[in-house]
Amino acid sequence: QKEVEQNSGPLSVPEGAIASLNCTYSDRGSQSFFWYRQYSGKSPELIMSIYSNGDKEDGRFTAQLNKASQYVSLLIRDSQPSDSATYLCAAYTGGFKTIFGAGTRLFVKA
Amino acid sequence: KAGVTQTPRYLIKTRGQQVTLSCSPISGHRSVSWYQQTPGQGLQFLFEYFSETQRNKGNFPGRFSGRQFSNSRSEMNVSTLELGDSALYLCASYSGRGNTEAFFGQGTRLTVV
Image (tube, rainbow over the protein chains, first blue to last red):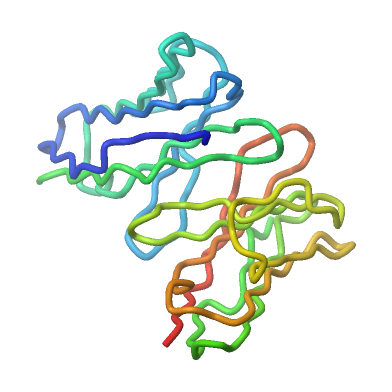
């Protein structure tokens, strides 16, 4: 069974701090990795995609991928209360199928 | 350009009934995936369609089915509804040109009573 695992949280950080979200995946053949943000009652919104080992930065967000360790992370710098949401990690495993983790709830305290 | 459109947004059905949900992907996108989201199970993959063909299917009973039309619009059907089918059903739109980034619709919230 191909899986994507995330700590469900909640992860609580003060405003202005760095939030670190982590994810592991079981299928070594996974090719593409994504982070989605989902506000309560809303649908997931793509915020980062990463395809090769290393770091990818976009504004306050940095995605990190380590295929050897089968590990993906998302760092949110200068966290804001508006970043409070559930963050879903996802892996495209081939076969036209993307597997999602159950999500980590993040709370940013003002 | 317009996003992914799912209808209806909310549904209340009785056990044993059937339901059909609709999804119109982003214009030009040819691939559609359906997911079920529940608090305990997260996002579970139902099936994926491209050019009217189902290319992959998740581990759901045969009561869950889907189809895609020539204009890329997709429908999913759930027959003989059970209480456990209550969930948010999400449709994801992909360009289908090797790009695996998913864009989600607002979802259909199904409640089975």
